[in-house]
Amino acid sequence: LLWPWDTQLAISQAWSLRIELVFYVLMVFLTKSFRVVFAWIAGSIGLVWLMALSSTPFLERYTSLTGSSFAFSIGAGVYFMRRYFRLSTVHIYAASAAFIAHLILAPYLWGFDRHYSGFADFFARETLGLYGSTVLGAYLLWAILDQLPKHSEHRTIKSVDRYLGKIAYAVFLCHW
Image 1 (cartoon, rainbow, N blue to C red):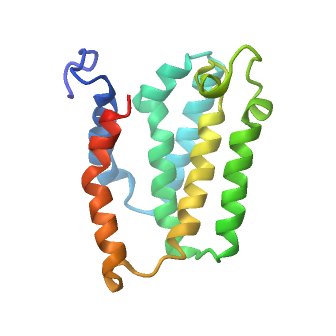
Image 2 (cartoon, helix red, strand yellow; image 1 turned 120 degrees about the horizontal axis):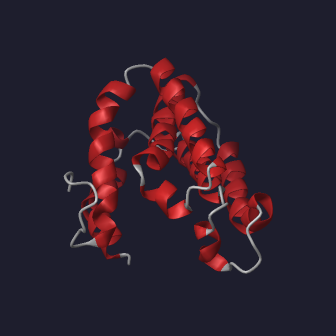
């Protein structure tokens, strides 16, 4: 999975496993403190903008370490933000509404060409819609997590969580 990087994989979707393995190692160093995570988020945003300004094709941004850094840094940011700020129930509704509105309005917000339709919009070279979805998805996740009871106190939630974790990669690798 890791070397050489441009090797054709037997399961094409496994490219993401490469990205994840690299970030799981990097996160040992990148998640030491909130300041480091904040710098990582800022750097990732800068990298996304540089790639967008240089007209890097969307698929290259999406499948590269530099492009994927954004999502991993935002996830680490949610982890640290939850330590300092607890979101009330109203945020579940606000985050849900914002996420759904973004999905509906993304073509207008991000200027997708009219000849794209449906999910093809997200593969347009100029789109930044995926990054908006990433931020709003992280906000929604944070809002939901802050309303859930502690996993250790509720066996049902813990067992559902464990089951979903066990099937996550199988579902992902079969989604094509």
